[in-house]
Structures are given as C-alpha cells and as structure tokens.
Amino acid sequence: MNDPRLVARVRRRLAADTAEPTAQTVAAALRAEQRLADSATVLTIVDELRRETVGAGPLEPLLVLDGVTDVLVNGAHEVHLDRGSGLERTPVTFPDDDAVRRLAQRLAAQAGRRLDDASPWVDARLPDGTRLHAVLAPLARPGTLISLRVPARRSFTLDELVAAGTLAPDGAEWLRAIVAARIAFVVSGGTGSGKTTLLAALLSIVPSGERLVVVEDATELRPDHPHVVGLEARPANVEGAGLVTMRDLVRQALRMRPDRLVVGEVRGAEVVDLLAALNTGHEGGCGTVHANSPSDVPARFEALGVAAGLPRAAVHSQLAAGLSLVLHLDRDERGQRRLRQIGMLVAGDDALVHCLPALTFDADGTSRGPAWDRLDDLLPRAP
Image (cartoon, rainbow, N blue to C red):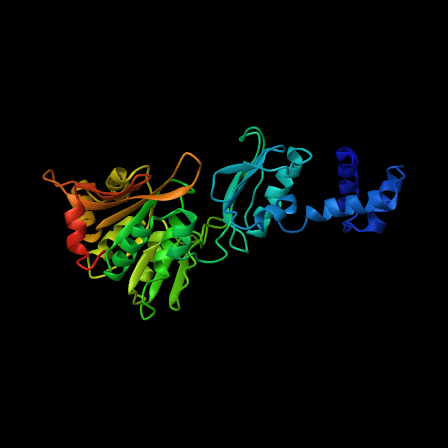
C-alpha cells in the first residue's frame, strides 16, 4: 500500500499542473518530490488517483454487486452494504476523511449540486439513478457520511419474492387479487424494508391495457409494464430557482389520463391532492409511506395532511373513502424483508380511521384478523 501522504502530495502537484494521472505525470511528480519509484508503484498510484475521478471510486465494485440496495460510508474506516439480509461490513476503507469528502463532493457535482462548508449536506440523484445523501464532517461523526441507495436493476416478480422469503405463497395470491380488483392501497414499512420492491412487483401485474402514471421524489420504481410514464420532482438550484414539488407533479399527473395513479412515497403536501384524486374516481391508486406498523399509517396521513392545511376531520374522511388497504413490510431478526400484514382502513365510531388486521403472516402461517370479513367482501374471488 502506498504512503497516503505521498499520494496526497502527488495529487496536489497534478492538480496544480491540471494534469491527468498517467504513468508519465505521476512519475514526474514523484521525481519532483525527490522520490524514486519502480513502475509497479507508479501504476498503483495512477490507479488510485484515477479511481478518485471515475464513478464512485473505491465504492464502485460494491455498487455493482448482485442484490445490493445500499452502500453506506461512515467516515474513512467503515463501509457497509445491504444485500437484503441486513448490513454487512466490507473491507473497503479510505486513507482519511479528506478522501471521503472528495468523493462526496465529486458525486454531488455529478448531480449538479453543491457540497462544501457553506452547504454541508446534499440529497440528490446521480445520472445512473443512484440516490446520494452526504453530510460533511465535522457535522457528521465519525467523519463524512455517504449514503448511496442503488436503484433496482430490474423488477422482481411476486414468485421471486415468494422464493426470497419476502412473501408467503398465499400472501402472493391475495396481492394478485387486490391488484385485479383495483383496490387503492399503500405499502408501509420502515427504511429499507422493501416497500419499493414490492410495489414495483405489484405494478408489474397490472393489466397491460392500463396506463400507469408514477410520481416520485427520485426515480426508483421500475415496474415491468408496457405503459408506464414517470414524473420526478426537482430541487431548487443554487440560486433557489427551479423547484418542482411532488404536489406540483401529482396535479399534473391527474391531467395525464392515469388508469392508476402511483405516488412513489407519500411524505409531504402531495397527500392532499392524492386523497382528493382517490376520492374522484381514480381507482387502484397506490404508493408507499413510512410507518412503524400498520396501525400507525392513519396517524402518518393525519400528520401530513394537517401540516399541508387540511383539517383533521377532512383527512380522516377522505382517507376512509379513498384508501382501503395497508400492506405492511418489516425485517425479521436476521434482516430478512417480509410482508407481515394486510390491514383494512376502517372509520371508527369516533370518525377517525383505524387500521385493523385482516391477514397476518408469520412463522406459524397465515392468521385472520378482525377485518378479515371486510377484505373477503372486497375480494369475492380471493383464494
């Protein structure tokens, strides 16, 4: 391994001369540092410097591994990845935090965003669709933090999710019946629980004659469907202009003749327009929402709706009329993603919406809950 301080001095010399790292330029920089090096050392330094300017640098081999959904950098000496079974620590490290900072700034620049001491965090999408989030030290500990969410390279089928253990076989049959019946639903769960993967699989079984209009903050949904169009939100530029919000896009989507309106993640004021759309004839709408449990979903919608200016009673009345089901995912003790419950959104005597279990999937099999009869009524041809 090369001396990091020597590599840093070579890097500075090349930057001062605006020279690309080649065998000739690196050898000249080493001579200027009064250091003699054999050809193997020169080429190793060339490779190291080139990795800093191409792709995701030392993270590139991790991003192309099969099944990787997230790559997380916690300072210079900890890099983790997630392949669907929890976080795994990798052998990848950086020489120091300056190297992590340079990579974060270069990735931000690829997305057309600024990352420096005056603007020490960034949330952006890279040209290949990878979602970047970074926070610079010293705000972040133990050093600069980089989070990369890798877009799905393809859409998984329900059968593949059954084989992977995410779905129980009878759970997959219920999901097929839900999609066929054009029932409005949301997929809930925590970060990394597989919400987007499941939603993409469900959209892939929508009849081919239907038009899907997908609205997302950052493009992640890639269903295998012949007629899907997408709208992606846009942050403001460094001058504060050009902002396009999810709410703007939901309004535009309603004018695009959607057979199914899909909101990739409901997390802001767009909830107002989504609930309005689901109450004006847009059947089969769906999306994802962050929630710790199915019973927390109504409270999540309430918080978003009230923050956007809807009265609490209006949120619950529209939620009861527009959405029917919650498909909740979580991770087990081994980090395995699983569909845990299908819940029904039901208005109670207090005029508030509650999520009642209809089907629960666990190690002991499938059990029916208090909302089973309601689900059975919605799906007369269900298994």
